[in-house]
Image 1 (cartoon, rainbow, N blue to C red):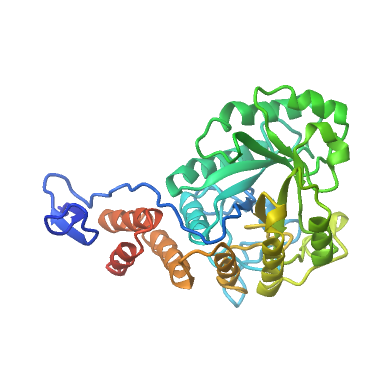
Image 2 (image 1 turned 180 degrees about the horizontal axis):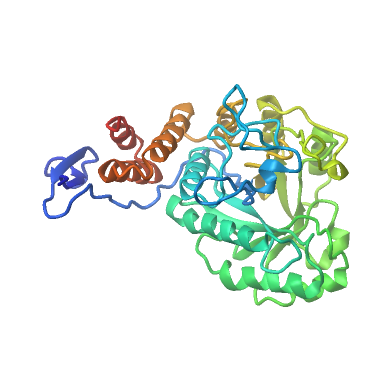
Length: 407
């Protein structure tokens, strides 16, 4: 029979932050104290949001197959090379290996890293509830699993809608109505002023301003609706509040030119990215191969962040492009090739008090949670859950001490 260990403050002072374990009797196991998320202090007040791809599936017990974004048409993740890495459709390799984006431990790891980098929320690449793509249901499931954990960590969320698989206006209306009915009312949904922020990648399929007037008139909200830069004419200037930038072949010069010519009266989303090197040709998606690249590295990310800082007065928020688009090589999450360097650049931009040490601790927590998952070591698992909540609450010293106690 195990010993019940409750986590409490030491001594008689209830405000004491030191950790003590006391025998609480009665029940087996370690008691986990769920803590409210702490608010991260930043010296840079530009809101920073991370574009997030929810489409990954790994053969990991949660899913029973490798999804197409790890395989494309030419990669076989079941094959492990001499370097210990699986054969995935990317030039770069996640530090935790290929994963599923509906895995709670992976989501916790991702969101904590973002929090300690000073990121305010995520912008989920979102395909909706109606469309011709066969994975629409799993994409929605993944997206809502992610959304369901943002509140606990203390991050906001919004969606960047995709209409490329929409067969008609009614399907787009169904998708935007779902956002209106299910997401806008969330305390975590990102607003600009009092209005919810809704973005669309493109639009790609529906490019008639009259149709967009119908679509946007179908909801009860007054969205801050932003298309991709250069697409305002396809949605209608009267239907949009502004636009947002992205990574394009012209690189820094194109981004600089964009900032120089933005309409100051509109809502503008800036962009920062670590580069671009797609895997489409190698992955057998030759019809989608792009004949350009931007050198991937911390220097590229720093340059785009510096450009955003210089033009901070012209943008309403900064979108980081992206957390995990491995197919295009725009991933900011830690990789074998770049370690935590991209997130360290983001920390420098946002001006948080955290650094590499905290990022590495979050990675260590993930590895230990994965190690003990399903082990039957319930007391250890609960201790690790408590470390997670300490990190959520920004109790870094408490998290470090408790994590060190788990061998």
